[in-house]
Length: 435
Image (cartoon, rainbow, N blue to C red; front, side, top):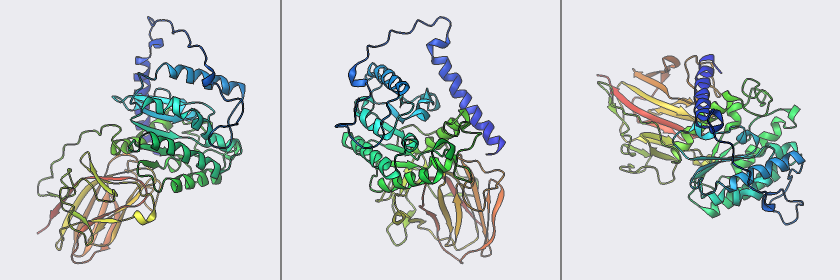
């Protein structure tokens, strides 16, 4: 992570902290005393045995956990009405520790339903009362790391997550669910990288046929070269600090915008002088799969691989490799030209820009590929690609840095985009044909 990016994350994180403190009554000298605790109800207690419980695997019953479990769930029971229609963040101590997660997404109703120490089975047990009863607008879920510490196998963990998703789907088959991959940790925390990677592979596999579930690769977001957590973002190799939380929020925001859970930042764009827009920001007019009719007036392809939302042409997260497809302009470009566009990549996203036919890699450069050392690349933010085609050769830059020089291209052909793993967004696509 570059120092500039760290400072950017810190500013975002501190802004959220200050906003949360300003809104917290206990932070003010004239704050009223806290309300009396709601009497504990047996339905909020950790079940005494596993008999008749859904799912499989560990349920924590240490005294500290039982106390945390009942305190949180009793308090939430009094907030069911006020939290109706919220975006629910569901998980364990990583989610609980985010605290006022809503300050990272201002203007949106958000409910934090993380409980420190919880497992996938624990979430499954409390799902109806803590989450579904809120009729959530959407759910962001991160769970599974504690199961691993308790010696549960990846297959069992993924099986419980499958049951959680099934229950959410049964409640509302159109409600967006964002499944965050299990964060990296360390062998010293009884969470080895290979086990976490296996859990995440199974999560991807389990969600192949679930269009309402978007999988966010938060493992790649935080993993070091050895597949473990980084101390500058997770000092205890398990929980993200304020920088890690800000980074998580930046990775989540584009996904939440795409599925309609939070509004996108407005973007007014007019082509530069001498340039023509190749994408109108409203629909796929001028674009189509090879050999297919133009997607004129459509807000997305029939298979949902490409969407038009918020003035962006979005390559959605592929569920299987068979979903990888190319979208082409219906126009051909036989002469010399300059192509300009901006892209934003989700963690470990991989797509491509096709110049007549050859592919120019366009992806999360910070993590993947030969361009990981770009000095001016802005991870989790918008970056500009400029491609100049002259005399059958293409020259490309990313934020002014050369990423491809003298790439041979055919004498004519369309401009294309590729759908691969991870979400990729494109905007401000414009071309200047050189005379």
